Length: 589
Ligand code: CA
Image (cartoon, rainbow, N blue to C red; front, top):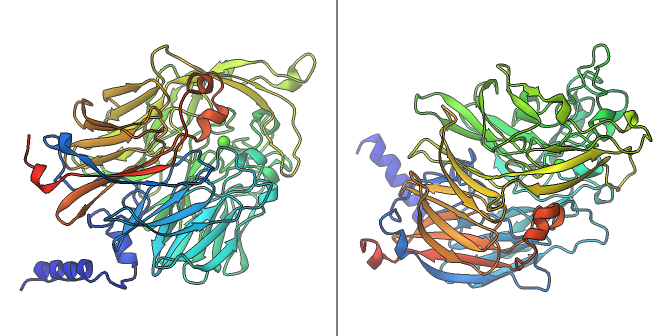
């Protein structure tokens, strides 16, 4: 028996002896290749959201049928943005208001439910959502809206440990899916609109002890094993005065992990407050660039210590709420280069070098971008200065700066909803939105637990017939190969498969399978409420399955201005749908 066969039979043994099995680092590292389970957010820690399964494909997807549906129940609905986790016959899914459900993956029957008792006065900025769980050892992990991290026994739902990350009364909350790296639970925080300080945290998966913490705003001190470690950046190199103390940069979307370079990659949100003139008067003081590091940046971290290896700032001295949190996807391009791809809120898709995060190229992925003419050879925006919201201090009455119309809107060319990279086509699939906003600045002072914006705004559509736009983009040329337009803004994740399919859903409730080469609709299903969740696929008993959450909500109805009015007819919900391609229909064309 050669080594390959040995390895293959060991893998088979591992997958068939799942009874009482523990989820290992190896299971997590091999999540993309092992199609019988989904044990990570992103279907692999590089967040490609690509499945090598091709049982379900362009020829037979029309035969995909519902297998079961599961209601999240309760009087409270709102946005359902979670990605399911599937392991050992159980599906784990989180719901609005910090709930976690364990469901029999074959029947759709509930096994147990954990309902976090949330205190009065939580401060979620952008709906009471949760984006999913993580699984490791015997536990399943998720974060709650009162900024706590919870470990539950995956068999019983009993609390194993529960840790307070930060003070919810100061505006901290938690919504992302945690990520497991080498036995540590890696999480970020939410609350950039309240002047919190963004940070990345690594907790021991077994006992919940904080191993390290890395604030992402310069001047703040990191922690390692209960001791102060190193300062982030250089105090006051890019921030004036004391503004860094409430500097924002919330790491609210969680991160990815590149195994090739052993690097955790996190994004940091907008600097606080939104009024950029308070953080940078336009003429940086001596020795101070005014860029407000590391807000609106991607950051590479050492998983062992939390030290920063590299950073890339997408929007220096950011002033439009272009959070830099968007997911960074590790991929290998057609020429064999190891790259990162990331679609920013600011409307540009960036390609970075995986070794050091260095800038390679950038392309616009939405139309009519107004705040920058483009990205220069160093990766820095070429600003259109007239498109920066005006300084209130320069206004005649001093209480409202000049209003400008900026594209994209503050909800971004792309918001949180994850992109997908297809290994089959070599292209990225980007759920984007074509919209702009009136925005102006106002004076503001920091007050604990109060919104810290110093800005007003109204989002407006750019075109009459659509806002949402799913685009297939070549990461080597920036060419948009096809575009799928949608009336309402897109707010759901995307998944690609070796079967040549692109899955995503719309606020109108439709779950779609598109052709990855043409964008043609091959299959669709009305789920009954708006889709703002993230699809997954897996193999079970020789058949391919697909799941998606349905339940309209998220930031658009709360913050969408004229767009929110346009989509106010959409109904809330809370349903987890699972579809299957029956064996007997796999070859029926
Ligand atoms: Ca923000």
